[in-house]
Structure formats: structure tokens, C-alpha cells
Length: 236
Picture 1 (cartoon, helix red, strand yellow):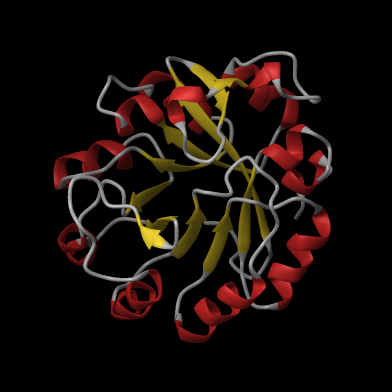
Picture 2 (cartoon, helix red, strand yellow):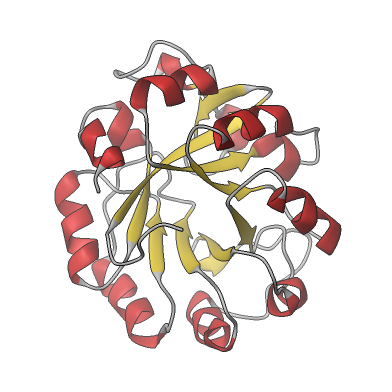
């Protein structure tokens, strides 16, 4: 288990058809192999990227699994032997949850695919809940979400979770910067450890997040273009 009192700079890898892709605004049909964007790596092979950057912790989104088109299970198993893995595997059921727990250290239940009923019933697993937010509302596949992001943050206070991830899908891959006012409101009402994903543009914003009480951040674009030094991924 990672020390929750140390700010966590968590490297993100989105896997699609066995390769790492560069995620932008959640528009998955437009994702391209990450080496076409990156100034840091010349490969989109996930194992080669892990070997090169040597992150302490990695957040993996298995886009095939999330989109209902296969999975990247064997690759994720290999990565789990190299570093600590947080996994969004598109969990929709208890069976999915069990499968994800067999290949990752921590399981992400995202509002895009996981129902509130499933989130409120989980026990016995190391779980983080991702509030997948687009245009200010929770993304929830095939159904209208009954809560606003802040309402769900408050509701989750009654559940034993490792973290809550605030994932701004509109800002993914854009380096648009962080909304400190909104994040401070989240911090005020949440009893959980908080992680931000999406929009982080430079290392100074990691310090701002730490100062308002967040425990970590998901980063990819700012690592690949050098705005955040790769050494932050290895920080103790």
C-alpha cells in the first residue's frame, strides 16, 4: 500500500488494442498512438514505456474493456509485475470486479460504467471511485445520473473507499489548467483522499493541489511534453 500522506503523481496510460494512446477530451475515436505526440518516448508499447519511465504508480484505462471490445488483460498483468497499478476496467458487475482484482493492485469504479448500487455494495476490495465529469455533469452510460458531482462526493462519505478521483473529461489531454474553486468545494465536503485527473499543465499545479488537501494527481500529457519532469513519477 502506498503512503497516503505523500502526494502522488500518478502516470496515466490509456491502452487500446495493445498500445498506449494519447487521450484528448474523452474523444476516443480520435485517440492516436502516444509516440506520435510524445517528446519523451518513441514507442507506444506499454511495457517499453514503463521500462523507460519507471513510474512508481500507474493508472491504466483499458479502453477496449471500457468500450466492450476485448481487453488488454495480459499486458496489464505484465505491468503489474513492474509497478503499482490502478485499473479502470469498465467494471459493471461483481464478476467484473473480481476479474479486475486479479490483475491490479487497486480497482477503479468509474461512474461511466459502474452503477451507484454497485459502488455502494462493494466490500473486501481496494477501491477508488472515479467521478467521470463532462460538461459539469457525471457521465453515466445509458442512464441519466441522479446526482450532481458534488452530491455524489457527499454521498460517498458513507462508503469505505481508498480514494475519490475527480476526472474532468473535457480537460483530458488539453493542459487547460485546474479549477481550484471547484476543487476546494470538493475538498470541503469529502471525507476521502482525493485525486485529480485532467487538465494539469505544469508542476506548480501539483503543489497547488497538495496545498488545498488533494493527495494526488493523474498525469500524462504534461509528462510527455516535458512540462512536468519525469522524476516526479518516481518521487518518494
